[in-house]
Image 1 (cartoon, helix red, strand yellow):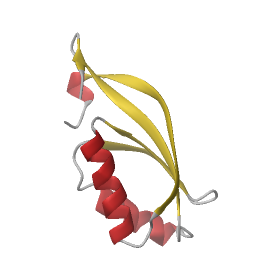
Image 2 (cartoon, helix red, strand yellow; image 1 turned 90 degrees about the horizontal axis):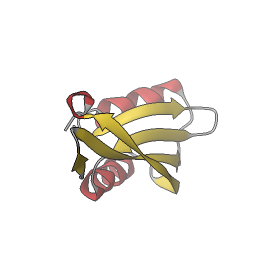
Image 3 (tube, helix red, strand yellow; image 1 turned 120 degrees about the horizontal axis):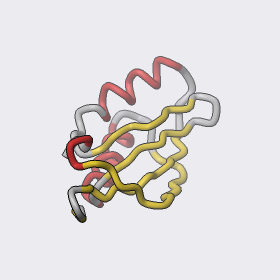
Length: 93
């Protein structure tokens, strides 16, 4: 993770998930991914089966991929958008 002038560099990523079909699925995903401290979930959309989140390192991204696969919601497609800067005190890292 790069730090520049008291700001932390995060990548914004959107992923299409397999088997994500209901609000119960959403609760399971949130419960399990909230245990990963170095990510921030932005959105979980049941209609198009996607999750949007911020992460600071490739290790964090791999943790998300592994956890989603382990709980039965593997990633089908991944989009990485432009990076974002957050104030350091706002980050979960």
